[in-house]
Image (cartoon, rainbow, N blue to C red):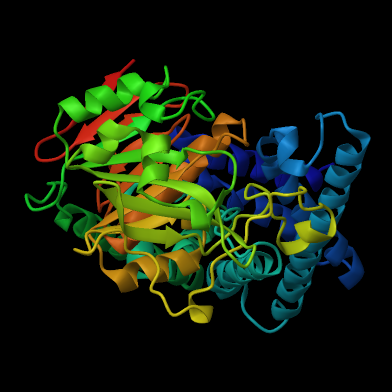
Length: 486
C-alpha cells in the first residue's frame, strides 16, 4: 500500500490537470509522487520492476478511459450501449491497450533501473528520466493511433507561452518534457537533503534553464497580434445544435433557416456550416448546381458570400470520401478531401481498433491519399486564403505539416464531437485546435454542430465561441466580432 499510494496520487493529479482546464497547473505535481514511488521499486528484481511499470502504465490508461467510453453505441456498430458484443469488444480494447501501455511503461522502469547503475542520481532524475518518459509516450503514439492525445504535457496547452514553445520546438512532446522536467526539479528539491554542492548545482542549472525557456515563451506570445487583418474576409459560423436538418433545402429547416437568414442580413463574405449537412452518401455524379440548390436553397446559391460545408461523397470507383466544398453562386471553387481519419469516430476502425471492431455496413469512410492523385488537396478558395480540415484531423502531427506547407492565413475546421457525449472530449478537441492554431500561426475558424464552435487567433486565444448545446451564429471580421444566440 505504501508503494501503491504515490502512483495513485500521481495519476489523480494527471486526471485532474488533463480533463479540467483551470487545473492545468496540477500537471507539474504529477511526477514528485511518481518518482517517490519509483524510488521504492527500482531497487527490486528486474521482473518486479517491470511489473510495477506495467501497473503504472495500466493506471495511466485507466485515467483516460471513462470519457472516451461515454460514446453513442452507433460509433461501435452496436444497437445499444448494453449490447453484449459491444461490452465484449470494449473489454477487448482495454486488454490490448493495457498490454501496450503496461509493456512500454514496464520497459521504461527497467531501463531506468539499469541506467541508475552507471549515472549519478541527480542527472538521472533531472535529465534521463524526462527523456525516457517522452520516448515512452512517443512509442505509445506510434503503436496506437499516431495522434497527440494522451500526453502529460497537453494540459499546458491552456497557457499561451507553452503553446508558443510547442510551436517552435517539437510540439506536444516538448510540453511533456517540460512537465516531467519541472516535476523532477520539484522532487529533487524535496528529496536531495541536505542540499550539498553537487545537488544544488544540478537543481540551480535546471531551474535557470527552465526560467529562461519560460521567458522566451512569454516573449513569443506577446509578439503575436490578435488583430484580424483588414484584407481577410468577414465570416459567419453556423451552429445549429442538431444532428442533421429535417427539411431540404436547409434554408427552410426550422433549425438552420433562421440562422442562415440572420447570417445573410449581416452581409458577411463567408458562411461556414458545421459538420456534414447531408447524412446519406451522395454520388459524385450527382453533384451539380441543381443539387446544391436542392440541398442549400436558392438564397444561399444567389448570395455573393462563399458557402463552406462538407458531405460524404462516393466516387465513381466506389470510395467514400468526406469532402468539404466552397461554393460561390452554386459553383465549386475549391474542395478538400479528408486525408486523416480518427479511429472509431470516422466509423472506420484504425490502429489496434481494427482487430476488435467491425466497419459499419455501408458506411466506411476512406482517407484521401494525395500521392495517389494528380489533384492538389487542401485549399478551399482560388485566392489561397482558406485551408481546410475535417473533424478531428488537428490531432495528427501530419495535419500540421500540411497546413504549414500551404501557407493559408485561415484554417476552417468543420466537424462534430457528437458521437462522444462527454464534456471532457469537447474541451479536449477545442484545446488541440488552440495548439494547432499557434503552431501553424493561422486564424482557426472552428464550426461544430453542437459546439464548441470558436474563432481562435494565431496565438491560440479564443476570441469568440458558442458553447456546447447552444444554437446561434458567430460573426467575425474587422473589429471584435460578436455572437448571436437563438
